[in-house]
Each structure stands twice: as C-alpha cells, then as structure tokens.
Amino acid sequence: MKKFKGRVICKGIYEGECVVSKQGVNTLATFQKSALKNAKKVVGSDQNNPDIYGKNLTGIALILPQTIGSTTGGLVIQTICQMGINPAALLFSEEIDSLAASGVILAKNWENSKIIAIDKLGKKILNEIKTGDRIKIEEDGTVTLIEEDAK
Image 1 (cartoon, rainbow, N blue to C red):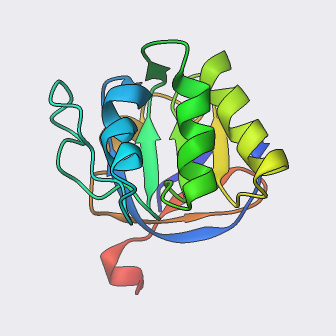
Image 2: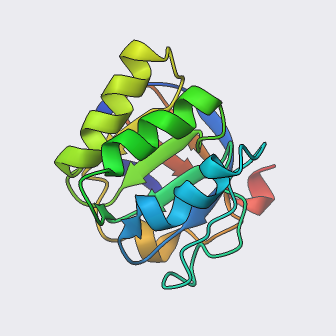
C-alpha cells in the first residue's frame, strides 16, 4: 500500500480519481479559459502542460509539484472555488507556493470552499501515483493509493 504524509493547509476527506502533473501548474493558463466561459467544469487549457491539457480538473485531486505563473494565481484559485468548478484537492509534492496558499485559504474562508490542500508530500508521489488512479485523502494529511486488488 502506497501512503504519503504531508502538511495540511486546508483539511478534508476525499476518495476518488486524481490527475498528476509532473511539472508546475500555471493556474492562469490552466483555469482561466473555463472560468471566463462560465463553464460548468474546468478542462485544463494550458497547452504547455501535456499532463493536464484537455483533462477534466473539476472535483478531482490534482497532484502537482507547485503552481507557477503570474501573481494572479491565488485569485484564479479563489475564483474557480467561488464558481464551484475547482479541483477537490491540490496535493503538492513540494512546499506550497505563496500564491496557491493565498488562493486556497481565501477560498476556504471567504467562499466556504471545501477544497483540500496538502503540501510536502514528497517527490515520489509524482511517480508512484498516475493519472486516473484512485486515492484516499484523510484529514491528517495522509494520501493513500487505492490498489485495484484492494477494492
């Protein structure tokens, strides 16, 4: 059983599918197009990130090293949370960057978002969990890969 323990930024419980990005996620390039269209879900629109491009990111766990890009990153996260089209969780292999942290904390406090954020999960998570895998997130920051034979 593969388990990863990280630092809880915004706690919550989740069980479901994940999408893994091995490179930093540009929040503006990834989420803005769906937000501007008032879409009912986010489809990754950053053509420079083949790990997430064209994939549904709403209601899933997004595993990533960090967010990258402009200073609008936190506002973009807060906005998609306000719209209810955000990922269920942002799981960072590295330490959460300040822009993502501000976005999830504002969304949690101002928008009453249920978004989960955990950081410092370690670089192994990016290689040992694959897009489409099912995971379980616990409030203490434990992320567990749900093995097929354990179902």
